[in-house]
Length: 58
Length: 445
Picture 1 (cartoon, one colour):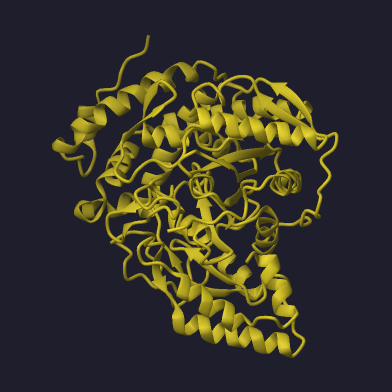
Picture 2: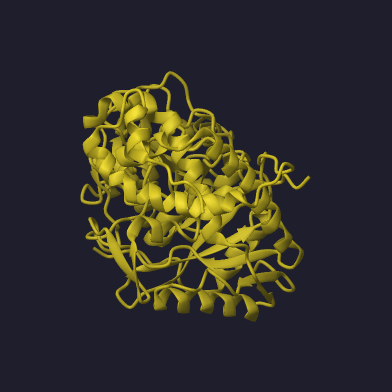
């Protein structure tokens, strides 16, 4: 399991903050995205470099 | 007429560029709302100049004198470029985008700038500032997006070619929904300079045309290289990968049948059909979303002080992008490399891969969810799920029409290739096009 981000707190801490009324509709989408993305990060190792192009196979 | 037919007619003096241009301007149908700006006067002057060049023996090649349009995020010197946004409604660039300059050097005649999804950040082209673009096959339906105006204009026969950009399917989706051809080349092959960005590492420029050979001609004029596929292109022995997982799992039945018929057509032409197992595309799509949310917000965050001037869907996506952590964005770029390597192994077994372009035909304007097979899906996520990953991989992809539903809506076939294998996918596309009677049908309104 991983620690879920508190999106409301994050949105409020931004400068300028995301208006509260708009934050509510972001929550389910961001939760779903985080739930899908965090497990993928387990694939990464210290050797995992960033993508540099479609032919980057080195 | 296609680009190549127009080129022949111009050289045989059966028609002039001015006549082609006048005809194109006459065919613009305000009901489709495919254009944000129409350039009647300058287009006619340019067409006359191109006619004069041809009559003096100056021939710039197959696009000389051909009327075209640019998606309205391609910078055009002295011509406003809105990006489909209220924020840029009066923006007039002082220089051309590289692709605009390339196509200008090739002798094209610019007749206008096409409507699009705001900032190219969406798939409906239901633009809150310039109005919804409508699908020529059924005006109650979306043309797809974000290059919806380009797709609609080509499908309606106004033009043989318009430019598009593709960050998560924005060339291929309109091609599929409008029954035309769309080429997203290998990432970086066509210059992005002077095109309003959306996702720095996933934006691709490419042509939307009526036919595959026209796509090859336009691709070359935009800076690509290779050959235009010959008539009766030979695909004997070519290995066509058919995914046994993901791409055919949840589809509209008529889409599935049409794409499988295209596979059979390729086999009948002598291609070898090879079953392949693709990497987890859902996972790559998640990576795509993290990348695009962060990149698009990087482009447009400076405009977030003007929230009332943005459409609700775009504003929501830009807000989401502000919540992506920097380390997550970098991790997404690291994961991208892993998936790219996994996917590249498929090219040991296949020369190209056939998939549907979109899982359904065009949804209705305003529709938020749709049934795909037995599943209810969000229209945006469903429409992009067979193509987002391809922008992460940066490989070339071609969408061609491969059939029509019983209701008369076009169905798209997506042909994927290895990096820089545009020649291969264009050759296969041309062979399928020649062997079927799909291209050439035009919407009747």
